[in-house]
Length: 452
Image (cartoon, rainbow, N blue to C red):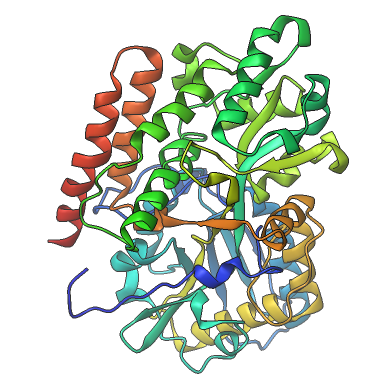
């Protein structure tokens, strides 16, 4: 970012017990270059809750939603708000992996979104000129901590609306059938031992250790972003920094060994990963074909048919010293922004809608129970999502949550480069050196492009 711009993000306090959980999105959408709009908008699912014919309500709301898995819940909540207030609320949900291109397309229209989101400081850098200053707003006043706000100088331009955790979702019943419990896994060495034993007895047991690490666009974000967060987090921690213009790759050997485990001890041949999808992974996990499934608290609705008592969640261990004290990866990449180019009436209508979402019984219940969110607002309800309870348990035990450092990744293009290298390595058409090059050299290149 330019030196005259001060955009700060402090997520350390997200580790407080009771404020954990609910990621959510099936894709990370860091703003990158001025990419051309794609067919993403045509894939978006939209619905407008029409206002009553005799309404005199001023303003309207158009929310461009980032989370495909919560589309149905947002549509229902928008309808409820319109029925209560007469204010029309339109929710459009971007296709998986297409939020940024959809946003660019929609913001160019005369009826642009009044409410959109950024994933953190990097995403904000591209959109800050469109962000309404929320200073003095009721919703900002209801935030439990200013640590959940993004600032541009003195202006508060975005607020986090959900705190989430991810790790290895575990079928405890299958794990016990293999002769283990989650208490047996406290490090990468433990995980490797269990995974390799399951693999050796795969035909006898009837299941694999890991679901397929699909690398198509509906699934690759789990590895080029969420898994890649681990070596970045440990490097930042070792160096005492919160971002960098040149990642060193100190922990890429550790990244390699967890990736090797994912692709060799799973349900499919590594050469098939390029075409494997997120739906494939869900089907394998729910179909009891694998013990471990890397994903987050937001994925509960996808796996709940296994039964709450059968679900566990482990930290993602990669082999770093002291990782036995590690908890889940916890943070947020979901920050609401109000479009300052909207009319005054639409801005006010949007602010009122947001405040209702985080304070009303209907809003807080929908966000906790239907969406599975933990929201950092004073009126938040406890979520019934058992994966969130597990995340809270790790904090209560004194485990150190892993920060979401992937919001500092320099661009979407960087992620794509790492993803392509991971896919080629798995298929045997590329080397791990290519992954290291994409990770380290790609970071420096993309950071320079993004920051002039």
